[in-house]
Image (tube, rainbow, N blue to C red; front, top):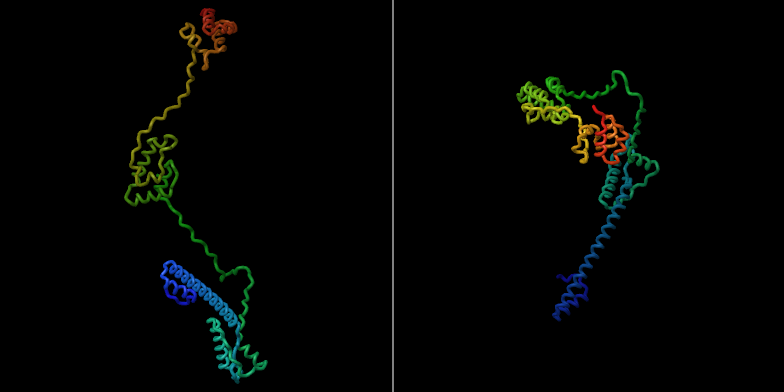
Length: 326
């Protein structure tokens, strides 16, 4: 490690450590020297930053002052030659001084103007100022808005070009698309139609395949559930070459039949059961069914209803015994 710019007290400490040959003290001295060098580096970087910032501020002030500088030196030359125009040497001198001032301002170097050799009176100074001062821009006068021009010189409005309309092939439109039961994806189906025709496929083969599917009745099943899209029919699978399976017959709807009446086990095997069965409702025997059965046999229905307290079997036996002879 170089011992440059190390304080004297640290150098003395290093000398003592070297004489004592103490490893711990040597490490402590090295650490102190390293910290001292790091502190020195930090201080130097801070000084450089302050110096750089001060230099930038000074150059900015000089640049701002240089941009506002005007005529700095006028040579002792005649102001007006005989023809009345500004002297060329005067104009060259003024332009050179002004350019030098601006160049110094851009480079950040202060510009010191030389002293004027000959003082100017008021008229001469005004003439010099008029010579150096840039001309003012001429105002731009815009014409007031008015109605658009008409006549032969008027610009004609540009009309947008009409969009090209897509024309479907006549065979596809009339013989394929109209009878096809599913009207979706017409443009894609037409593109596939033209592609197959260009590849050499006979349109009559496609139409014959369509007629086979329409006549099979397969597409009419389940509300058209098996109808494929036109683009699928004309796709790479070439569905028009397939033969549809035999259509299943559509069965007529069968009305729901009422469930058989419920017959209690107590009256099964009775001789009058077949006579009483038509009067039994879906929920089983009831008082109304017994009264209607008794009335059909010529027996008092109310008397039959009073016998129901003894059970259905005994009531049926009584009604059957009291029936009117045929």
